[in-house]
Amino acid sequence: MHQRPETTFMTSINRIAVLTSGGETPGMNSAIRAVVRTASKAGVEVMGVHRGFAGLVQQDFQNLDSLSVSRIIQGGGSILRCGSCKEFYQADIRQLCGEILRNHKIEALVVIGGAGSITGAHLLNTETGIPVMAIPGTIENDIAGCDDAIGFDTAVNTAVEAIDKLQDTAFSHQRLFLVEVAGTNSGFVAAEVALAIGAEMLIVPEHLVDVAEVAQQLSQNLRSGLPANGMVVLAEGSAQPKLMQKLVDELKVRGEDPRICVLGHIQRGGAPTAHDRSLAASLGNAVIHLLLAGTTNTLVGIEKSEIKALPLSEIVDKRKPLSFDAIKLVEELGR
Image (cartoon, rainbow, N blue to C red):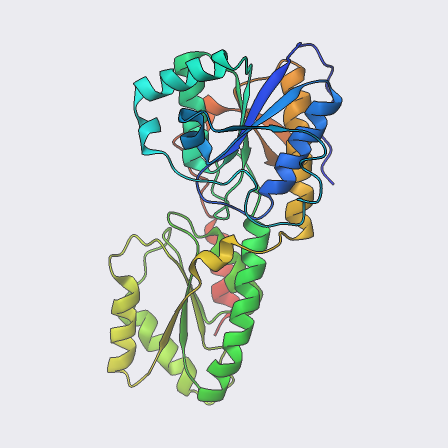
């Protein structure tokens, strides 16, 4: 359990709204529940916004109370639905959203989502003056200033469970599997998964590789006569175009018959782990305490095992870098 900063309620807020934006992540419902129940006990009304910023544009609201968020903590996805909103890239639409919030007497907005959603929240505040608070919810765990994000632990466990099954067939047929996991611009999921399943190799956007050299090493491992894991974990994003296909081609030249497995959206679904439920509950509770203490326009996240309030202006347009030590650890423990 993460301890929130000590706060004293200083601000009188009557109504807030909460939305989940971008890609859904396991644990979002736990965060929604914590926001609603903490706010309700402080006498603050909560409006849920359906489908992220798109629902805000269309004024698709729902009253939320303690009863309406009962028995949602164990569910995957988001009861408010998620989605992207291309319209929100336009400054005039953001101005419209500010007017909509004011017309509904909504005094602050809580946004749960990833980097794009956090940037949207920051723009809404700077351009309209609407107070915003953000909670990191992304399986990619790439939010600057945060050690953890809602959904990351569940996504990693889902991937590990799937790959454990693949290892049985990899061993039986002495075959390589190239497994693609989440990570458009970062390798946090891939690195964690690779370490947990004992992968032969890890390929991430942050680290360029020599494809021919990688293929040669994998082929040698497989034909050495020693037990081989047979798993190569790749993040879906890459700084090297068509890397997956190039690796397959190089392996086939060496007489191997690799299989590709793309885990895709399965990593976004399913019941959240206990860790993600607890993390989301702690952050959702802290957001309301900080908001009512007068803190706004911040991201509430975990840094060095403590709940921290980070100014949005300091983290937008930034990505958390993957430590090269994580890559090296997988390499040292692999073949």
